[in-house]
Length: 296
Ligand code: NAD
Image (cartoon, rainbow, N blue to C red):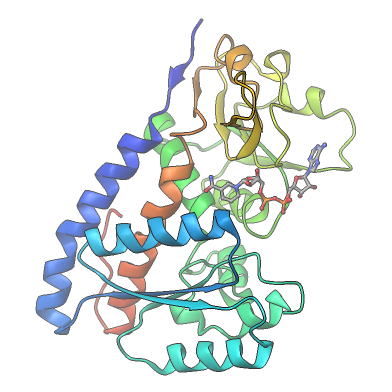
């Protein structure tokens, strides 16, 4: 058996197209475009790439992009003052503070300062709490995108056993909450889990969000299971001095057993930015007192 390769790039492109098509109707009713503010502190190269792609995607969707690049020695006080300004700015619907922040800044305090209605990353405790109790919330983009791919492949997820490997606030925990909302039976595995391969073998759905290159092996996967690989790991390539990206899943092995699998790159990654635009459009509707578009 060879797995169906889940084309996250194509799905994300379709979603971005649908979002872009909804923007003119919002502009007509609200009298302005949805606005996303992205704040980058310091010059972490990976963060710079992410921020550039977010800006490009925002503009392509017809939204306003506000970029704030601050030096690495910015004080926590100055960053919090900027967040307060963005909270008050009526043209800003979404605020994203790119993580990681420099070590002298407490990221929890910064995330807590963002207006939950503009928290398009879904990291504020108010949104995390709403997700946990099943209220309407802004949901973290990577797990939201992963869920969209799962529903696209599998349809109804009710009753399926999902094993989420990783318990971070950004991916693992919200992913587990979303799967629970879909009536999956959810197991959350983590660094202290005993006999992880045996637990993963029970799964109809495996979501790997660990940050360890190719950790999940082919013989851990139940025949026909759906595998979502969230991991992004840079490893040496065959050519000297070159690197390549791999996921948390041993892709070549797992494609022999899984029913469907996301590749890295081209799987979950593109969904994250598409879902950021989705959350910005939804936040813009709510802030303007309009019903959010259905089916996004
Ligand atoms: P994290 O470091 O915050 O969390 C990793 C989790 O993995 C922890 O909960 C830990 O308990 C668990 N873990 C560590 N070692 C383990 C082991 N040996 N066995 C089982 N569990 C183990 O990472 P994160 O922010 O959740 O990100 C996870 C991965 O997803 C990273 O590779 C990251 O780059 C990637 N990521 C991708 C996207 C995307 O857009 N595709 C977005 C966010 C994160």
